[in-house]
Amino acid sequence: MLFVVWLAATASASADCKVHRGDRVVLYSTTDDPSVLAWDSKTRLREYHAASFDEAQAMLPHAILIAPGTHATVFLCVPGFVESPIFAQPDDAVGVQITNGPQHGLIRWVLGTDVRTKAYLHH
Amino acid sequence: MTKEPLANLTGTLLMTAFLLVTLLFAIEGTFETRTQIANTFDRQAQIQQAQLELEELLRLQIDEENSLRGYSLTRDPFYVAQYHQAAAGYDATEGTIAQILHEQDLTGPQQLLATYGQLQSRWRDEIAAPLLSHPEQRLVELDKRNKLFSDYETRTAAAIREALAGTGGALARSTQLQLDRSSYIRALWVLAFGLLAILFNAYRSRLNRELEQERTITDILQRAFRSESVPLPHCEVGSAYLSATSHLAVGGDVFDVFRLSPDRALVLIADVSGKGVDAAVLTAFIKFMIRAIALRQSEPAAILSEFNGAFSKAVGNPYLFVSMFVGVLDTTTFRLEYGSAGHDCAYLRRRGHVEQLAVTGPVLGVMEEPFYSKTVALNPGDILVLATDGLTEVRNRDGQPLLGVGAMELIERANPHAQQLADELVTLVRARSGSRLRDDLAILAIRMIDTGPSRA
Image (cartoon, rainbow over all chains, first blue to last red; front, side, top):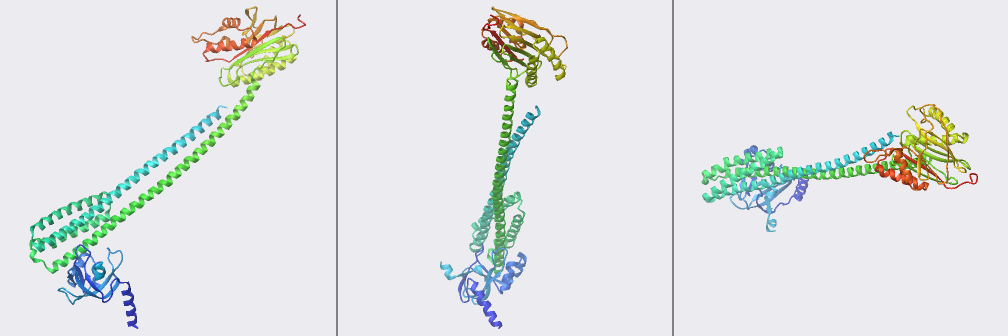
């Protein structure tokens, strides 16, 4: 029963996300610094964006800095999971496995807006 | 009688004042709205300027970061100079924005800008300064903190943008609201002005109607009060009337020629002290009362005596008096029997000479002395000229009155036909007075033109 609920929730969530499980993506931030902060859990990702500066600074040991252009594969996407004062709408939390570079093989959570699909980049 | 015109005048003035005040308010309101809208536009312009300066600030902040990255990668001192130049520009721009926000009293964006400034200051101390001192010590942890600063600065800048955009939007809505309100108010003023104009027009129409009614009544009264003469057999009758009250055809003088019987006519001229409508009312009273008495009393002295008694009792004003000439003319024999109650402007022009007919008693309304009658036998060609003191008292430009002598000279030289004579005298009086009459003038001229069978 729980499995069915989890499956339904996952399917529903994936349906609203702009990326889906198995998508191959490139990580790139649109802020002034194009590097991407990748977190060890989606909850930490959400807390980072809701925290004050000092709180966020204290959370930094749980994050790694990924160079812009790093490749990854999506393993899960939770739509509208991250809320922030600067977002007009909640953003997705995207779980990725890094597929190149020094952090190759690591699994981390990044913001939906930091994820570019290859199709998007080509266009 | 005097209160109504005053009320009308006050009403007209009040309505005009209302219209003027409405107009002034409308103009003042338009200017006020214009000032308000100008102020709002000015604020909007200031906020737009702050938004532009904010984008410039963000560009300079990126310049700072990029210069630092460039130096970290290349160790080229050029990037250090670029960094300092961008930092100086950043500080100046931040000051400009702070000044605008302070002037516009935007506390929310002011606080956000202060937060942004503090972040930038911390970034310089904690990230930039260590990297400038030791560019080779670029550590992962430092990069993460740099990313953290970047995220928070982006977040704060977005909040400032949003706050300024919100204020700008509010001002735009306020401007629209002011424009709408101004349009409504202007429409209301136009409506009020129009309504007042309609009211004013209605009020003026009512005044005109009342004035027209008064004119009609005045015309009727003037016809009733106007002196009149009827044609007499064997005589030529001429008359003229000049009122000192320019717009009235009535006054304090009265003459009357009334046929008592087929061959007897009442000839009357009188002068009531005073002038205008009040005097005219008395002249009507005199005219009809003398007619009534003359139908019973044949002798002028008896007519004057009876009228004197009745006048004193009826009028009851000791300061009011009347000078009067009453004659009964037999149009067959040209025998004139007359009584003159203090009326010395009675003349007889006979064979080119003019003589004054003697006064036979005092003015009426003063005392109860007896009045006498005199008889004058007239001949064909003789002209009886009766006038009021408007003739003898008329003054020239030097203030000299004409007096009886002057009047007799004028009569002597005048046209022998009765009406022409009367008209000529009026013309001469007008010319002498320069159209500034001080007293009413009545002239009655009767010329004997034929002999009747009895006389023959």
